[in-house]
Length: 73
Image 1 (cartoon, rainbow, N blue to C red):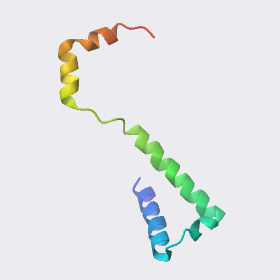
Image 2: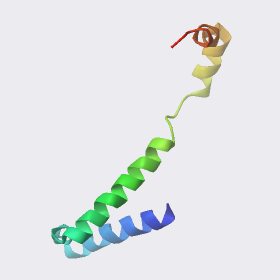
Image 3: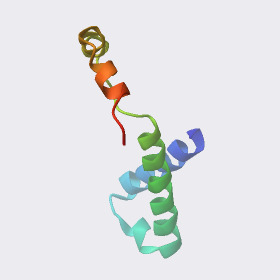
């Protein structure tokens, strides 16, 4: 993860220094950036969705989990 973020920072710095997207004209560099972004997006999906503990506690108190527990898929 740290290596991917460092690589992304290198791309951003190079684009910023040159003030150009010419780096993406090189097919190898463009493919490297695309793979990097796919890996970063994949990890972000694994983090899950944030939730509010208060809302979860309220739903537990109302017993909503009991209804969901007995549903069949």
